[in-house]
Amino acid sequence: MTESILQAYLNEQHIRTDVSENVESLKKAVGEITTYLKKKKERAELIPFTLVALDPMVRDIDPVVKQVETIIIKNWPAFKNSVTATKDKSTTYIRAVILESLS
Image 1 (cartoon, rainbow, N blue to C red):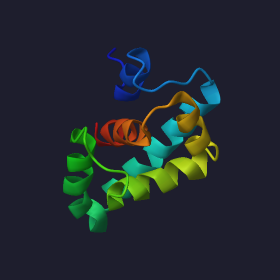
Image 2 (cartoon, rainbow, N blue to C red):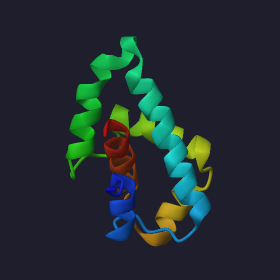
Image 3 (spheres, one colour):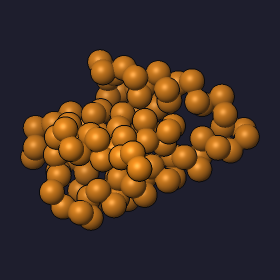
């Protein structure tokens, strides 16, 4: 059994959290984004989501980033504070969630 992309990011410490609830919140966000992208009318969104997921230099003002961040915050209200506390970039978390959704 291969590990998920999200788990790989956690193992490599690209996503720094040791709170299992935070990981569960990210998994819930993955589920919501997966459901969103599977809708027939949203299939055109696959391309911009993929481009954001693959771009390590994506800016936090990108519309896809904002959309995914909103979903993450809905599931993990302290997301912004947690990311700031670890001095990580929120786009790393967002890209991991999108990649997992696309897989």
